[in-house]
Amino acid sequence: MWGSMSERTPFIVGNWKMYKTVAEARGALTVFRDAVRNIDGVDCGVAPPFPALETCAATITGSDIALAGQNLYPGDEGAFTGEVSAPMLKAAGATHVIIGHSERRHLFGEDDTLIARKVKSAVDQNLIPILCVGETQEQREADETAEVVTAQLGGGLTKVKSAGQLDLVVAYEPVWAIGTGLTATPAQAQEVHGLIRDFLGDFLGATSAQETRIQYGGSVKPSNAAELLAERDIDGALVGGASLDPSSFAAIVEAAAG
Ligand code: PEP
Image 1 (cartoon, rainbow, N blue to C red):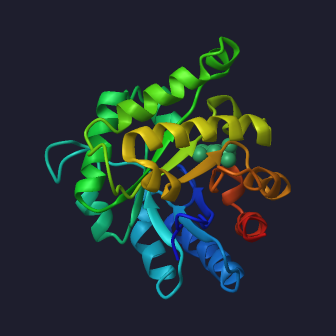
Image 2: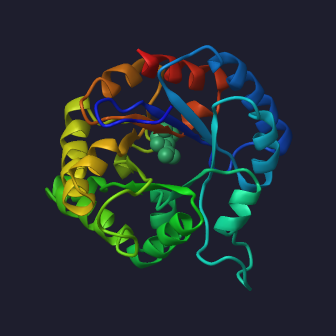
């Protein structure tokens, strides 16, 4: 079941980045799938590396676990060596795709113009984008968090319709908290999630903004997930490191179920 206006179902997604071979992905996902089978009141998903997508799709058949790509390139096909398109992700079984992850922005130089094309490509193929936004430590210290996050959101959404229904997940991931062990406090995260919700209200209208799930990402683990998710506008988590171990990933899902 997906989030509703009055109550958004938390959505926990594991981003496996460039970890796990096909066999390792199958093994970890099998353990995770069995561990979360009886947990209600939370949606979850996994974003494996591209070669493991199809195997993961087979592994989660019959479960409620969603499958996400970690990236895509705009367009259906073409001479773009090393890239993967939205139709290819869909054909492999994905329903979601992470776009604009800070590693893509900072290590691979992706800007909002490219990210906007990626979001449009996903939406055109009915893949739900998980659009990542977040400030660096330097930007936070310069008091630029609100400006940076709203510019990334606005930039990423420029090519999709600005009102009404848009199947979208936003992930607020402060760059300084990703893979560092540093976590935003629940209050720090809620403050930014609140302004993301306000931005979405202006962009999509109040109803869609209330329905859109905003995940927090940045060193989420079993011990801090519940307090983050207790905040009003934190509707789930994008989890990197802690999602690699299926029992700690399942413990986060359990914490989100309350
Ligand atoms: C991420 O990669 O999206 C992430 C939040 O990583 P970690 O949980 O390891 O900080």
